[in-house]
Length: 239
Image (cartoon, rainbow, N blue to C red):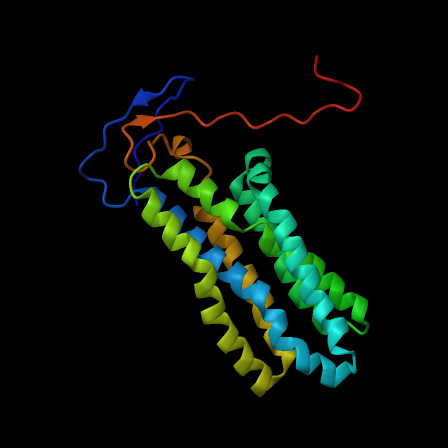
């Protein structure tokens, strides 16, 4: 796909008329990658519920202990989600989502080596909880707020629906894998699925339309990306 040459953007918005030879605005590619990441995050977050009985049968751990990993997962998902937008403003969408997917892959993949219940809490509870929490509704708001003026409500609704779609797609598949091939195969599939999304994020998930010299979808002006917050130096207080 050919993009227009980068338009020099100063602090002021500049008019950037849309040419007729553009077939697909890059905002739709960003939204598509975000949808895939959100579908995966929802499926990854719900996977531990399918592993309760297989883990109980193999290791003999009480169901209450295994359920604690699910509780930690949900707790960290809820605690991380409100800060996801701030993390994306500070470090960039691409970095945050890539690291989140790597956390999910590590948390799921390392479970095949675990031998104690605390390792389940660490992997499925802490790592997967932090990873999926970084790809929550704040991610939706960040993407739609930066890339869409027109169709923002539609895109927000579709991306939000990705949460329910992820559970509908992943849970039946994971349940079949657990039944036919064991829970370790299911855990490795989840890890592989998370890793498979990382190249798409790195390649297609741009930070701002201005990085391509384009206006947001439906806008007529290129607006410069706001500067990222600088790290506060220790011992220095704002006056």
